Length: 429
Ligand code: AFD
Ligand code: MN
Ligand code: MN
Image (cartoon, rainbow, N blue to C red; front, top):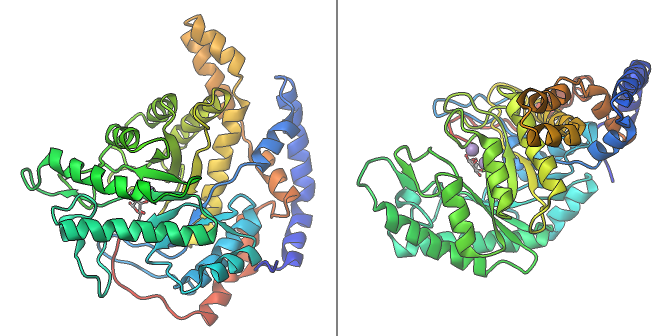
């Protein structure tokens, strides 16, 4: 394995920070011990936690208005893998990459899998793209894809998804995530019932092509690019579709794909209750943008989601094994820095959820002691779990302060000299 950042640089940075970390870890250990929690056990759970990163998040995204490339950003799957390897090498929490087709198309997937393995990476869910037309494409997705009124367009979209499964098989993936941009901008534009019928019929063809150990993750989104209705608009549509398709179909919750103030943690609990919680796209949202950095706007919501996930783990249903992934668009930051920071935030929310005194919480809930039930969550949320994450990273070979080590590595500056510049233009990716 050849990792991108120099081991000496990481060791040197860690040597400067190790004493402070040991001191803070010991102090936090004593504090947690007073509540009967063994810090090493929490640290070991955190060390076992991972979240995948999206290849499309490695480049600068853009808004509908503009994209401002950062010098040295990756412009192909090989450069993206290198950047994802930097994120994982420093954070030790992101060992898998989620590819998007046809953006990440190559001629040899076996070679790509080996290239990733050499960088310490594997592949997570494959994503199909039926929301854009590609050069030379026969049918246009202007009328939608799986729900299009045009039979040949639906066929093309189904075949693309089946092709994605085949690429994913060669890459070692076991999940296909299907998000479609299908929907309408005007009342009356399409029949709301029939468009769902068409979606379900096409999705069933994709489902039938899934290998035995694969899952199809259905991702809902309330709006955009369609602004009046979307075919899979919410968790209700998603779970109904998943139930109709069969046991290998599960729901994927993208935190940014709901109306503002939606109780997402309750959606998580509902989906789990029916054995349909398949995965997450972590990000944050304030107004209409669905791809802000995880926990940058509402870290408490992220904690409450993880609180449900830890509860779900204790009461597993139907092989509870959600796939965790970041899905963000980095418009004003270095994408590597955003994903290092986001992985840390996501891991921290998981760690805090582990600190919840579940017995106290459940007893308070049963006794209708509202304040003490709330306090069971609040006490855990208030703990600064930074030393636990840093210690887990250090022991796995990462950097105590991953962002600082990244800046010291001058990775982006070096890549700015080597890589060809990214194009301008606008786009939601
Ligand atoms: C979309 C969805 C979906 C999709 C991605 C494409 O979240 O995950 O693959 O963005 O950029 O909003
Ligand atoms: Mn998403
Ligand atoms: Mn999104």
